[in-house]
Figure 1 (cartoon, one colour):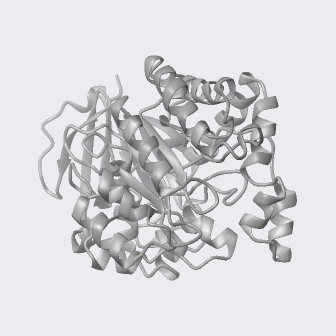
Figure 2 (cartoon, helix red, strand yellow):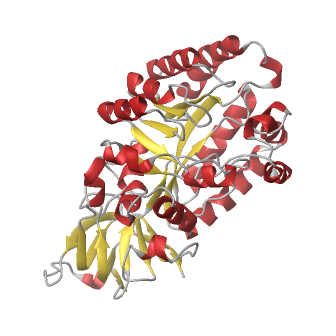
Length: 414
């Protein structure tokens, strides 16, 4: 039994809610001062204010005294590519020299480079590397991770990536939400036949992935010189017909209309959005598409950050994610994520916390189960070393997570 009491936390930052939060609602964290949280059989059973009596026999419960420490929902990372082979440290050096992301892609680097290494890796090699990366994320307070395929771009390797994520979801303490991203780039063998490659994904890959229940979501890189609006519309429409939730890499490098397409199709989320238009931002807000922003990627690519302030002020539901991947964001640093979101993207600490808990849970379709400290939800919790959530961006670049609890089990204790 996973029975636990976290007692007298200086703050219980509940982020209370069962759906994502939009606009000014992102600032309301529903903080309880000196609160206590009770977990029964891995589920939150009581959230108590100071002085409220505890009608539970504690003989069957582990008790954690949390005085002087803030308790938050476990962090949810709604956009990663954490299962891959090989590394691209050489390309990082090229970027520092001034080569653009698209220049490197056109030279055979980028996604295609990782594709070669991932095709060559065995399933066990990918599993071991993926497990190590999840372990590192767990120590940073991440309790649920979205992972994408898209480094195979052929039938065997795409299925291999998804099966690795399925194994990790079953065997690792963290929850892994799998996304099929067969249209991450056009592999060398399909160059010049992009429409046929989309057909291959629609006609061969979607039915296979759906039949084996290897992914919940489908994603595509909608971008100039990658996949067009029309190709993306066709791919995502077919994905929805197969029962997948829809995600889209949108407007990362140029204003391309990806945000507008996400709104048109009612996507679960649109991600990146560095160059999203005002029209696209307003359309996403109206359609309740989660705007998932990836500050570590913009930072690593020396790009201007996504317009988080504009999005929130236009009533968008904004989430944050690390985009952990071997190329444009080889980092799952939660401390850096919070610092960049607040210092450079002009988000308040409250908005940033909302964006990496209840809203990032909404970005993977799980806001009803995780992302907040509410009775009935899965007991995924993070205890900080400090008395306030405001230390997350303030203690720049430092991991201040002391304890990580998943389904009522203490996984990390620093």
